[in-house]
Structure formats: C-alpha cells, structure tokens
Image 1: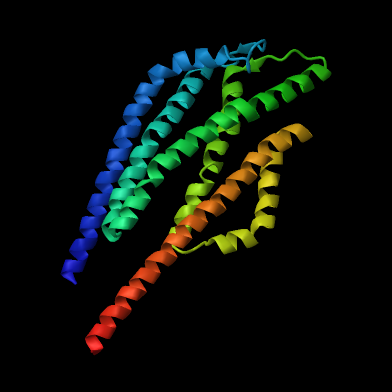
Image 2 (image 1 turned 60 degrees about the horizontal axis):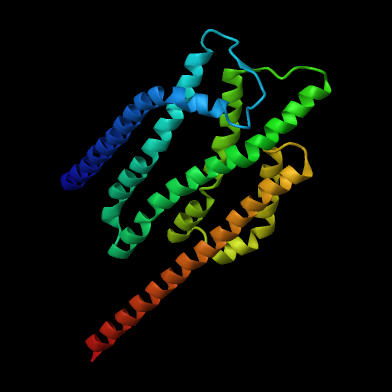
Length: 257
C-alpha cells in the first residue's frame, strides 16, 4: 500500500514538473509576444482585409488590451507543442513501442492543423465577414470606423475557433485509438455530423450562400478525412489483435503438447 502511494506521489510530482515546464515556456513566449505584437499589429493593419477601414482607439487601455491579446495568442501557439510533448512523455510509460511511436506523430500533426485552421479563418472566413459587415454599415449611411480593440477582438473570435475545429482529425484518431470511436460508427453518424458542421459553418459566416459553402465544405472534408484516418488506425488495431491471437494460440498449443 505504501509503495502504491509512493508511486502515485511520484506520478503527481512528475505531472507538476511537466506543468511547470509548460507554464515556463508560455510565460517566456508571452513576454516575447508582447514585443512581437507591435510589428504584427502593424502588418495586419496593412493587410487588404483592413485596407481602407480606419482603425481608431476608443479607450486609453485599448493599445494595452490589443498587445496582451496578441501576446497571449503567441504564448498559446508556442506552448502548444511543448504541452503536447510533455503530455506524451507523461502517458508514454503506459504505452508499448508501437503506441509510443504512433502517438508521437500526433504532436506535429495537431500543431500543423491548428496553424492551418487559424490561417483558414483569417484568410478565408474573416475577409468575407468583414466585407459583409462593411457593406451592411454602408447601407445605413455610416462610415466604418472600428475601435482597434474591438476589431482585433472580433478577428480573434472568428479565427481561433477554426484552429480548434481543425483538430477534429486528431481527436478522432485519438478516440479511435482508445476504442471509443471506430470508422463504422463515424460513417453511421455522417448525416448528423454533416448537419452539425453545416450549422457551425453557417453560424460563423455571414448570411450569404457563397460564404456558407466556402466554409462548410472544408469542414465536411475534415470529417471525411477523420473517417479515413480512423479507418487506418482501426485496421492497425485489428492487425495487432490478429498477430497477438496468432502468437498466443501458438504458445498455448506448444504448451499443451
């Protein structure tokens, strides 16, 4: 009992150390992001998305608020691979060699999809929404003047959710690996998943059919990619089980003889 308690304590100590490492990286990236925020803000203000739209400050704390938003996002992006790596190191002792090697690939894939989702949200979704909102403002005879905190806050609210949505294939692969999902179940859920993703795509875009289609189709393709990846993981699991059963039956037959 005492050894078991020591093992639990050791696990908690290790978990605390790994969390401290992640927090340290996040804090360093947060500080660096505060200095990188200025050039990044200036670059985004010159992008065609914001071209011709005056961005003004409406409150004395707007500049600090925007700097902190960018610094926080930079900290999250920098700390994400470190957090995933330490999570993998924490659970890897309970995995076999194949599972360790396979799960390690989740780290760069998750980071890549997160960045792709952010880029998709910024270069595809955000311009459509800004164009729609600007046109709506013009219809009431008002000049589009956006507060800098509101502008970038609105941008983050549109962009970051796509970074999360693009994690769908990785989540499905993980849930398949731990046998919560399988490709057959995902295929049966296709109609409901399509409906849910279409609702998400429509909710995140202006009420315009072209914008809805341009956002919904990539989300549906992500779901199909998730089914394909789930099928790959599931087949590997069946192959591993067949090899284990073959080896076990051979050892059992040899023992009986």
